[in-house]
Image 1 (cartoon, rainbow, N blue to C red):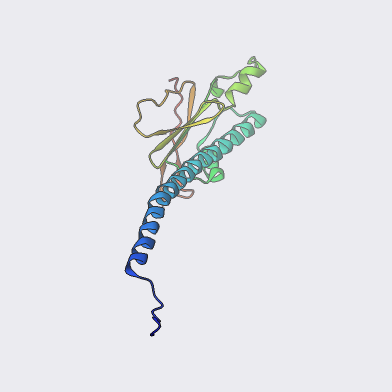
Image 2 (image 1 turned 90 degrees about the vertical axis):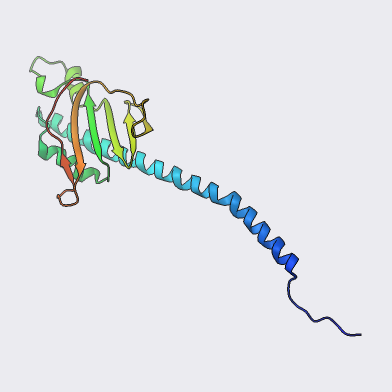
Length: 176
């Protein structure tokens, strides 16, 4: 009697293994893509928080120095401090700091130097800070809330040639 010394897999066994691998790939790939999308969303929120923190720090500095103008240099300092790749960042306060007088109460002065709302845009996403938390929207979404208060635009364009790469927005103050 001859012994069969074939030490390989049969065609059926190879096909079964390939089918199992294909099923696992079909299950895992969408899950991994979901993780990547969620990580990207979290990065946008972290960038927006960084910009907000930098803006509030600069406003606090203005408050401490008793200055009433958020000049271009200060706005560019916010951009340098934040160091994030967004497209637009606008903060809103509930009081206009340029309208403050010696008779202004502490609460009014505090409100003029505190970020009430913020809008941050990056890569087709719009993030809105409502004073408590960030909400993410797709650019062009009709459900993006309208912000109210005194608008202080920080930057409006990303420019690879500029140093820093952010360019400060024009000094416009308006009530929405």
